[in-house]
Image (cartoon, rainbow, N blue to C red; front, side):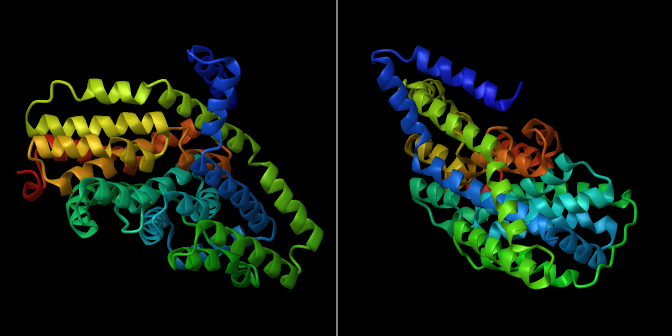
Length: 396
């Protein structure tokens, strides 16, 4: 079923079961969710991302960047290199969405040369993007988790890295093993190809430097036009047509995002999240049970909101009360909130990251999910950290 149809059915049902107010007010409430500032910000990102991705492809930036990477790395190191790059960039810029925008188009070009599916290479980048989203000092999730639990970012990082670093190492090892079986490929060696890589290099540098993602994408669009016109690879009207095609190509993604915002707002309005918070906090037994409850709370909230930062803020107050009542370490609680929210966000097919990656890759979000090594392993390591009570320093 097309995801737009699925959300249409969900939207109609959500409006229909909302009681106590007239139909016009139900629709108005639904529209408030769709027009949430966080939803609209994602839409502006999608618009600029579509323009940049199509513009860069039209002027040859993707092919040139792929050729440059192929000339520097052997085939066996391309998948590990992509994963490490995604981890590093997301750690530097604190956003998984920005990392997906910057790296997925390049990954698709590499995947094509290696005979890998678009879904697989998109998953490599998307998985690595959540490493930094979970750990970065400037990530919204880190800020939300530490503020709600009253601990420092530095202390939360120390507790968090002990949980997720083994997951990253395991995922990296898997990519090394897969890489050993990939065929050797050579770059096409097109002249002047390095100049065509400048838009992507500029985007990466600007992102790592901390520029706002909208500013980064705008800079990338301008750079594509300047390089394309300067090298003669992209006439002016072809560039403009490519921008228009990229923007309209994001139409389905934008519609799904608006519908998801509306449905999730009606879930909140009807008390669905409060209901879950009340029932999931009953019957807690011991520190292990308390930590598991916090993990379940933030995971369910993330399923209902499709936003890991909002999920942390929604459950942060209740989690802090549980932490105080059962004598948990706030640093461990903050790590659990951040890690499990990123785990769920990395796997839900209606989350911004998977929707954007799937759109850029031209596949269904469900095709990407089975290939997401790191989020699955991260979730397993986070669960083991609760069941086995590690790191010991933060689990007393």
